[in-house]
Length: 295
Image (tube, rainbow, N blue to C red):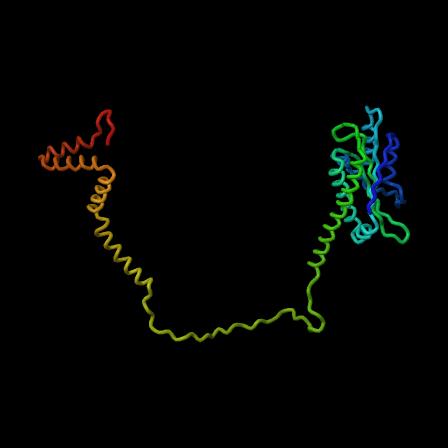
C-alpha cells in the first residue's frame, strides 16, 4: 500500500532549511554531492534546481501573508513496487518518479508550486525504497495563499499511486519490447551449423517453348478494321456541311417553331428576288437594328 504524509508549518526559515535537508541529508552522500531539485509549477521549474534561488523564492513568497502555510509531502511506494523499481536503471527510475510527481500535483492539487527531491535508498536486506520529499510554496501560481483541504490530500494519495503504477507498466512494456527486438531467433544446437549464405538453384535458361501454329486474327484486329471503315463513312457523309445544316435547322424547329417558320419564309421570299436585291437584303438582314435586340 502506498503511503502519503502531509504536514505543514508557518516558518520561512524552517522551509529554507528543509530544502537544504532534502537536497543533502537523510542519508550521507559522498564528496558533498546533492540530489537534484525539481520544480512544481512553471516558476519553480525555471530555477532548474538552483538551491539558493529556490530557498530565496520560498522565503519571498511568505511576505505579505499574515500566516503563511508551507505544506510538506512525503510520497512513498510499497515493497512490491520498490522491487519493480529496483529492476530498472537508477536514472530511468528517477525519471518515472519525477513524471509521476508532476502529474499527481497537476491533477489533484492544480495551481500549487514548490520543489521536490527523489530519494532512492534502502535498508538492511531491503531493496532501494524510492520516495519523494516535496515542499510547497505558501502561494499558488496565481498569488493566492495556499490552502489544501484533507479531501485534496486524499486525492493526492490516490493520484500518486495510480500515476506510479501506470508509468511503471509503460516502462516495463517498453523494455520488454526492446529486449525481444534485440534477441535473435537461432535454431537449436541439434539443427547443426547455420550457413552464412544459402545458394539458390539457378533457373534453367533453356526452356522448351511449345510449338505454335499459324496466328489467328483476333477481335481487336476486326475492331480496328471496322473502325477505319466507319471513320471513312463518317468523314464522307455524317460530317458533311449539308447534314450539319439540316440537323441544325431541325433542332431550331423543335426549340422555337415560330422563329424557324419566319426564317424559312424569309429565305423563300429572298430566293425569288433578283440577285442584286437579294444580296442587298441579306446584307441588311445581318445588321442589328438600332436600339433593338437581335433575335
